[in-house]
Length: 381
Figure 1 (tube, rainbow, N blue to C red):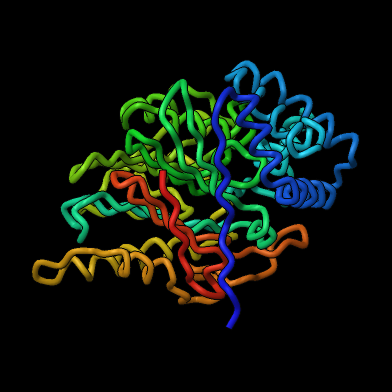
Figure 2 (figure 1 turned 120 degrees about the vertical axis):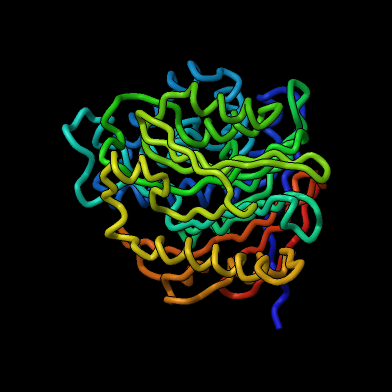
């Protein structure tokens, strides 16, 4: 038997720059791993080092205009990890640089062989308190992305004097991915694609938008944050707020121009990587779905697995049920739980992590490489 390996917990506090320095100093080898990963991915798309640097530099004024403190935090991370600022910008803007680089160079269309795919093939879910065995809202997620990220992921605990504290699972060097804050606001994200991606000019990089959502005082403010931000590309965000034995949640499907929403049914909400709002299905063309049609059955199987539990007399869902639903390997390697398989540009796709969140209780459990063993480590805010 091998000893389970977990994602390191990184604690940061103080000013944005100070938090960044602490972040970079804590995990410089993981930051370096992320830099190497995305430099290689961009290189396979035909970008040389000079072009990568220029793309990163072009993002700096956009980051500063959205929130100058975010840029200061990135400068601190770069200083702490001993890398150039452009490398930290690349990690935080990797979606826009990997999939929107053609538009950033003012090309007429994004690269035809590379539809945007921000998070690979993820699956997220909510269980509202009425159906939860704990009596508290349950929020969970499988993050499917590059296999190398099993060695670049971290759990970042942010003590934020100017707002709520946050606990977020993210990539080393990045400001946020998914998680929750001390107000009980929680967030997960899944990739979507549409024909409008990267066709409407500059927007807010997704990492920064997610970080802003995690700074929200309540669910309404989190939703307003998304409505108020111009977006480069499509994305799905599941938002919730848990307060004691109460809670609510929503799925926001965002395109560059519009936002569509779906609400829990029977106190359950499951989302994978295809548009579910009827209005969105009618209005938007999805160029990514032919490449990941498994999204359709992944969503359905998780929803059915949880639905079978609550269909029993006095049935309620506990974390064992959630873990089992997210460990479904039907269609392997194209299951809810993604076992490693070749992906675009000579990369390997896999479920990097399974995350379970009880935001009302300020606790998160994360399993690294769940396709090998589902060993969950507990992290608390």
